Length: 114
Length: 119
Image (cartoon, each protein chain N blue to C red):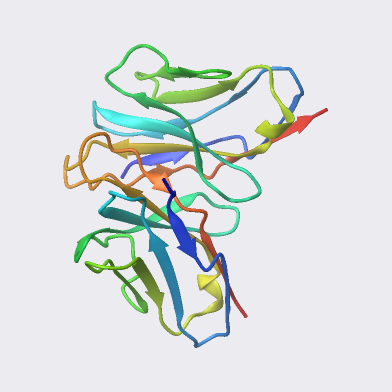
């Protein structure tokens, strides 16, 4: 049973470009959280999605950031017009949506903005 | 807002010795979950141990155990017989019950403690 997968593992973008981060949840999991980890910091919640539905985006910056989780395919976190302050590790975590609420984390995507 | 505080940015322990990492949190809720996560250099987040607030008994997982003091809002992690592979960042995390007070179950993390293990 494959775990949560994220790709790419490392992503380098120049200022002003777009970054697309992908998260494939564990099999049977229909809910995904995205977290951001700035250097020397803990993880901070960004957005919570169910397939085809954004449940809570209260942690996401209002501009330039968006997330989706289509019926088919991975969840995508999209950052438009990246700035240096977006450099961070982005993690997704998935769970089944019912029962015990343990979240299973992916390995993260490290975004570097040059 | 709920906050999680880890007051020890770095800790060091001799191999085979015991070390305790501190965590305090702030909440007005009576029921919630607490977790310790390990993040090695690979950056993978690994769940070490979890505690349900309604349980008085401290959780234990092999060499890892917690001291949960609900009234003091304290949740420390004890690592016994430390091993070189225990060297990592350790994060304490809090989570509301799902759908309670608008919560959607997201985790609230402390800033972490970097643990070094000396051979």
